[in-house]
Image (cartoon, rainbow, N blue to C red; front, side, top):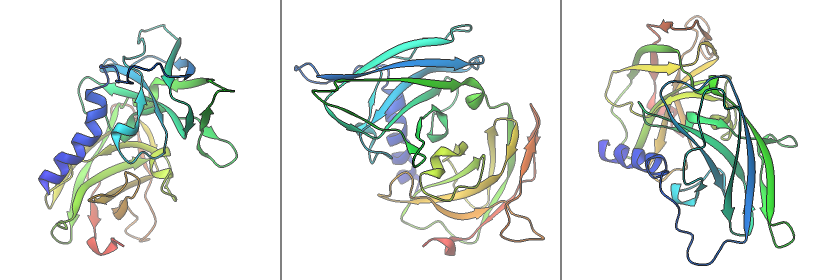
Length: 269
């Protein structure tokens, strides 16, 4: 299981640890590009390493090497509110555009998406197409630094009712702004996630942004699964009303302790 988890982390981190290098697009110049204006709001956290523009032909991506990304971080400075950037791309269809934040202190993960525009018609990530008739796509992205400035925490213990399955790729605890209902919502509503869950019992401390967490859950991911194929095996619920998620309200610099969760492997479909 530990080996599988290290592989999972490697897949996630490969993108973030390699983003300072240019992609090798080959010798032939690419015919299309996206031009992006990023409007930042607020002040970047002190532990900010950088912010990177990412384009995915398929969302969610099945592999990290499917992604196109800016070769270097966007400029990050206090008082710098507007940044212009672009990525050259081959003609074709693309299903999402996003901004990923990277910390100096922790490994970036799926919760570090600062901005991802949605299609108002279906609330899915906004896509675009580049062609000979439309070789350039332009868009504005709005990014709030508060999303990644996690100034509070949730702490507790996860109790599993048996050993981890042999097919485990990763087990995680995640906090959400609202309870997700569809696979895509497991990314859209995500506020913080920790993939390092292992052992029984497991004590965790999850950094989050102060405010209200409406759903705190333990997820299991099987080997060879997509990143949105989460299985919910437990969540923080009302003991007097089982099945009802408990909201957790946090002030700035507050740690909510004793938030224990009981995870049941029989929940796996």
